[in-house]
Image (cartoon, rainbow, N blue to C red; front, side, top):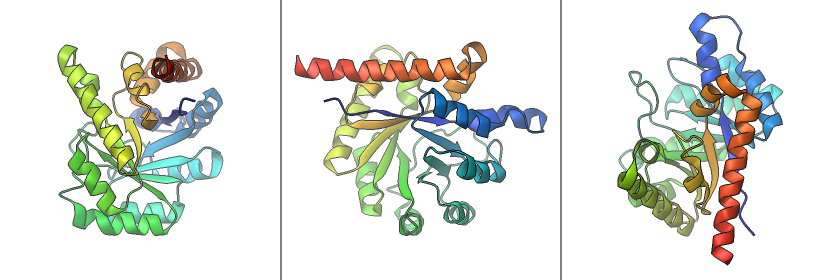
Length: 251
């Protein structure tokens, strides 16, 4: 039987649109509720240091008003650790963060930052929060995740999504190999960043990946087709790719 592939919907950029004008519309919590109705398995939100999209109030409301697990993306700072420990989301994904970047530019260098990350991972874990590290498809980074005691990794899929031709095939192989290596280490493997209708299939076929986190594409595409139908189409593409991979394996 094929392993189920979860879909986490990132609602950050609903808040980006709201913040462009101020006020309360569009409401990211309303988007999270709509995503749940459309088939999302979880909600992801990144509370950045500069609060450029999701706000502290959004996190409070998400915890209070949605039934799906909340995955809080956060930098490994004292401020964000305090917020996570106060709200106790289902999961916390530690990501690299630079104030000057438009979006997350790559994976966390967990190997280099072992000393900084260890106490953060420890405190989150002790509070019952499932810790994930957003990293590149690199065995050394996966080894570092094990050393830190993080049970989950999310592989940065941006390079794969941005590449074309042989370069994309090469990036896909890196993700396939990293996901297999992660499973061998006992890590749960997720993937995210940049995935869209044209790129999700080959990633969804990787059965050692159990969750995809997708946000910007879904929110952008919803302008043309609505959030409900956009999420349902993504969910169908994921399910069909996973079923096809299972069929190929048993043929």
